Image (cartoon, rainbow, N blue to C red; front, side):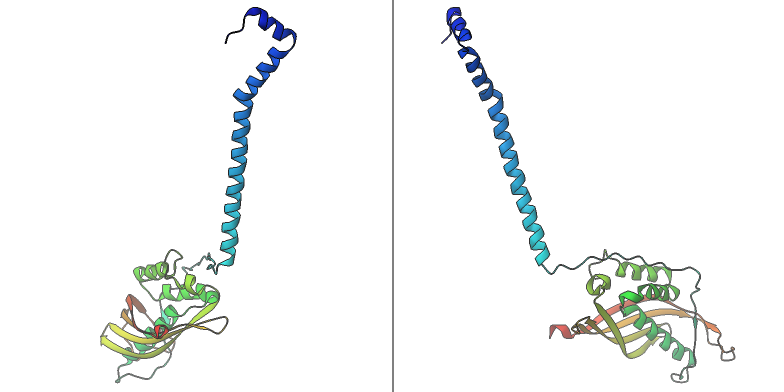
Length: 233
């Protein structure tokens, strides 16, 4: 209902008009703002409680600690190996030498010790073609969920025992080996048997070469196959 001028004048005179205006202002602007502020504060508190709950649950879980590592591989070493005297295999000095080198390569490549990663990378680089070394780098990368660095981290060491070796042809060897990983509490976390197929390139053996002569050995292809998983027994 509209008020006439006389009523307005009376309300102004007794301040009722200003009280009504103030109440209208609060209902129009202050109350909605206050309501939104209260809702915002409640939502913020709920979000904080959710975040704190997640952090608390996360701290209770046996979450695997992520690791970052950098391996620097020097360029100053050439891809060569010095050969020590070895027993001949079927009177074949080349096969005798290759057998020793290939088995050593498997042991070094498949072993794991966090404190020896730098020397491991250097060894594989010096005795592999560029493609095979890149394959090894990708295998060890933290982007690979099967990386030994992620599986064993700093708490476990993986040891390799050669079981036997068989020449498949003049430039390919099958190496059978056993892997065993033990954590810092003495628990065996891996017990498996494998076969590694290695294709390689070598120098010809010079029986008249001087002692300490350099013999080149490169791995050009490397594949492993799981033969037995004793962890599943």
